[in-house]
Image (cartoon, rainbow, N blue to C red; front, side, top):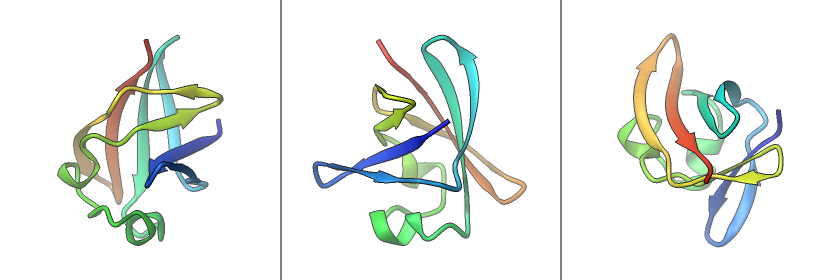
Length: 82
């Protein structure tokens, strides 16, 4: 799945993100803590740092996500689309 993150009015590609589909309109996005995307978007590699992130997953824009975990070297963010 392709993943982009909204930053300063533009979507930025997040190539290292791993997406797990929960349902047809809900996903869990896992971003490696050592990914340069954190610095590029000025987001800390923590769940709190990713609260409110808007994603573009396979052509679908999401509602602001909720950082939900930090484990095994990944920040986890839950999000959905209407």
